[in-house]
Structure formats: C-alpha cells, structure tokens
Amino acid sequence: MDSQLLTLIDLQAFDARIAALEAEAARLPKQIDAIHAALAQAKKSLDALRTKADTTRKDLRSREKDLEVVTAKRAKADARLWEVKNNTEYSAVLAEIEAIKQEKGQGEEEILGLMELQERLTADIREGEIRFRGDEQRAQQDEVVVKKKLEAVETELAGVRAERDSRARELPRPLLTDYEKILKARSGVAVARVTSSAVCGGCRVSIRPQAIQELKAADTLMLCESCGRYLYWQESA
Image 1 (cartoon, rainbow, N blue to C red):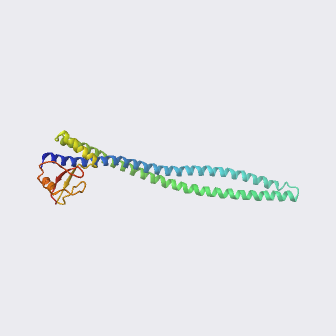
Image 2 (cartoon, helix red, strand yellow; image 1 turned 30 degrees about the horizontal axis):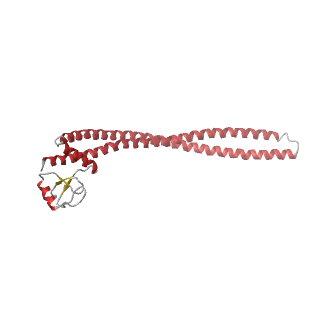
Image 3 (cartoon, rainbow, N blue to C red; image 1 turned 120 degrees about the vertical axis):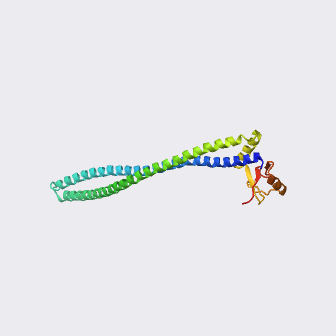
C-alpha cells in the first residue's frame, strides 16, 4: 500500500480518537457542574425547610402574644360582671365574654396547628440534614472520580496529539492541508474504506469497477468521486 495512504489512514485513526477524547474532555466538566448543581438544589431544599421552620416559630410567638392579650381581655371582662348595674349591661358583658371565648378558642387552635407544624418541620429538617450529609459525601466522591477521569483523558489526549503531529510530519504539506480540509468539511472523516460491497464507507455511494481495481492496487491516492474523501481498499472479514 502507498506509504502516504498508510499515513493518511493512521492520521484518520488518530483524529477519530482525538475527537472522541475532546468530546469526553468537554463532557466531564459538565458532569462535575451537574454534581454541584444537584448538591446546591438539595441544600436549597433544606434551607427552605429551615426558613419555613423559622417563620413558623415567629408566627407561633406572635400567636402566643395575641393569646396573652385575649386572656387579659377575658380577665377584665370577667371582672366587669361584678360591676354591672342592670341586666342590659350584664347581657352586653356576657356577649363580650362569649366573643372573647371564641377568639381565644380560635387562637388556641391556631397555636396548636403551628406547634404541630413546627414538630413536623423539626423532624423533616433532621432527616433532611442526614440526607444532605450523605448527598454531600457522595458528591465529593463522585467529583473525585470524575476529576481523575478528566485527568486521564487530558493525559491521553496530549499523548495522542503528539503522536498524530509526529505522524503528520511524514506527509507533504499540501497533502496534509488537503486532508485536514476534507476532515473539517466531512464531519471528521477524511479517509474512508471500501470493501467488497464496493461503496464508499463515508458517503455510501457506489464505486466504479475500474476505481475498485485501482484501489486494490493501492499504488496511488484516490478520492471518492461523490464526497471527495480519500479511499482505501479493505478486504471484507
């Protein structure tokens, strides 16, 4: 096989590997970002519970103070029962006491509801903190794994690029320029194989019988008449 064609085939293999490694090198940092985002969301949910619990505590204190005011009003109303001078005043005070009782009952009900909510939130926060610590630990472990993968990919990528550059220097500059132009124009595939199916492995267009014979001889470079890729013959397995 023509030595330049062999070099082109090797370059294609290097460039395919480089493209795969570059894609992986671009993907892994996004995976780390996703780990951070998931942990941030978990913390946000936990913080929301803490905020709700804090609001509930404030509401509870406010309702308790309101209840103290209502209780004081009841005490004053009870005392006024002994000060009334006629049935009309007595009935008015009794009506006021009844209204205060209803207000007090509603306040006590609200306080009970807030206490129950506070208890649930306290339990939820406790569980959330345990869960978040686990999430945090797993996130740290996952990040270490991904960073090691990224380091390995970048190391391999540097090595493959160096090998590729060394091999590329074996080609005449015009041929290398043409190869790289095709590589860019044809989605990273500048060299395509042809097997007994007699079609270009890049564009799947049939190759002329005469061209097949020339490919088999492999003593000159040949381009696909359809897509412009370099072609080489490979016997079917």
